Length: 350
Image (cartoon, one colour):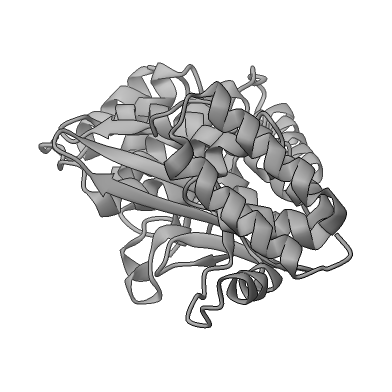
């Protein structure tokens, strides 16, 4: 049996009829503008999913373990009101909500009883005391728990843009005219931390076919161009979470990743829907350094597909970057020169 609570970030009238009319208006406004949570409600959301994960993070055979009756949970949070459907452990979950809401100066309405709990009121304190679950030692973070937490926060951002999440591989993908766009996530266990990797991947079959022609190696199947965390931030190291850190630290790091996704990564996917724009975003003096080792064949093949006559100019961009960074010409320049020479040989008119 579902149990509905409303959490409100606004002053409420004392009169019950006026109060209900105002709450109805807040619900209607949230449903119409879908603007996402305000500051206090956004913080409450982060704290709640840290204790009670969103329904969307559970596998089909584990849905019964979730306390929420619907998801994604973020969709239930508006600027001034959140409406939550608690499917099980209602009293325990409500006690947690009351405690967290009180610290954020939020009101909580028990819809079933038509009862309003004001921040840090005696009624709220009595309910918390009666139903709060005894504190238990926080479980240490794991690679899986870190990854699942981040995925739960990013899914609501990518799904409206047409991306589908692959639960097993932990990536979001959508089909575009030249192939597939993917957001790829992974967590690496280090000695004291978990490193979090985020890469915008572009899988382009035409690039793979061109690499095969140039190298003469038909076993080469790599056709991916990847823009990783440093590409978007300029930072050489990925974000990390202490292995013995608490959930608050994970929330802070996830906030940074979520902001990066909203302001940079998703807009980047939208502006690279054709090969010409993708090539321009990769093969330029500011960004080419990120592709000189791992993806240089794919990046140059992409440039050749888009504009064969400019391949020498594109190669010069890489050569100048290698010189400015004092990289080994034998290790970096020679492979690029050899590959470009073979590309040019494919088109005698060049």
